Length: 197
Picture: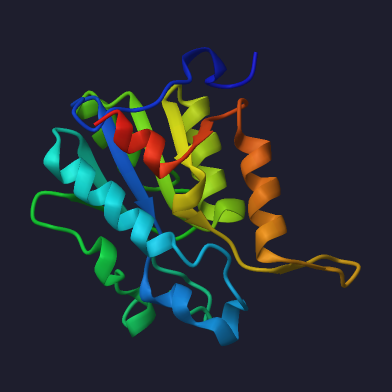
């Protein structure tokens, strides 16, 4: 049986055992010269909807930020790219987790904090589906969290493979979600998540 597949279900923002985990939504993602064109221009709007929904309920909110150790990365700490985008700016009492690799659980306190607060269900969103979101979702499922991923609250950038073929942001995102769905998470939509609120 695939990791976490026996426990797939939508999370409920009213449920104190549910957490909204927003990954790497920082000013860095607006650097088109570095990343290329992003898919899902509605990302920020969907994130705002989810965050508003969660803040009206009893669920936990976790903001994961990336502080890259790569010299050229727009995510480096101390520069504007490392700042949270306005649409997901943390409020007092919301958890902030800082990571340095493409995994929100590796070398962070996230797993311990979630268990401490009785969280068992995660709604995981942000960028990129192929990297930090996807890696974190797989890790969460392997830790026996149930995970939902609203497809319209995630995004990707183009990827050039080793043969020089450019995969569009849309293609990368679609395949990344397909590989998660039913194996590590339930891929759903912002609308479906909010309907449970």
